[in-house]
Every structure is written in structure tokens, then in C-alpha cells.
Image (cartoon, rainbow, N blue to C red):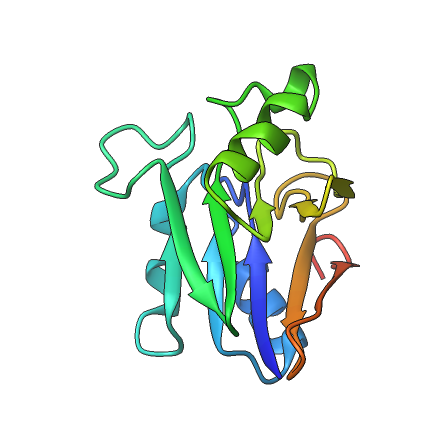
Length: 157
């Protein structure tokens, strides 16, 4: 089984990133979906990190999207502002289908959400910043089945 720690919208909460990493247990990589992607510098040397640039990541060298193979599944990573996810998920779902993705991970709204657009999983782990910090774990089992779950950190503990 392959496991990804998914975080987004950390907005400077490096302690939250470390707490999520410690709580996640055994993972294969971390995904940061933008809005202070530079916060992942605190993970250097700890694990593999995939990052995309969000609308608050001025000067970032990261791409606005990534499509990776993970556990034999195609995972698309975006922040979501370009796909206007605050107005709905239709555009994001169609874009993921166009990219032949099995799942698309996005942020931007700060609201955890798991829905399907046809056969494509659309997942937002919420935000590591704010009053109810959250993160997600994506698992791909040996048969290629994808599962996600959202977890919440106690604020500032």
C-alpha cells in the first residue's frame, strides 16, 4: 500500500506541517497544494515532497499543477484557483478527466471535501491554517483502489 500525506493552505503554519507528518505515521511522500508552498522547507531531508504553487505563492518556482503516477494511479495536483473551485467543482472535474487523472487533489477553499466527478476522485484536505487545521491521507492499495480520509489537528496544541 502507498500512502500520501496531503496538506494545503498552510499559510506559515510550519508547526502544523510537522504535527501532521508525525500524526500520519508511515507515508511515502507529502503533497502541498499551495498557499505558502515554501513552508515545506521544514520537511527537507525527512520525506519526498510534491508541491504546487497557489495564488498566494508569489515568486514560487513550483509549477501550478503536477500529474504524477502514485501506486499505479494518475494523481493530478492543483491549488484550484485557476479552476475556480470556489464557484463549484464542475470545471475541476472536467479538467481532471481531460488529463486522464484517477484523482485530483486541490486546496484553495480551506474546506475539506471528497466527491466524485464521474470516475475521478476530487479531494480537498482543507487548510492547515485557521481555527480547525486539517490534512488528508490518500492510500492506494495493492489492487489500485484509492481511499482518502481527512484528519483534524487540535489548534495550537
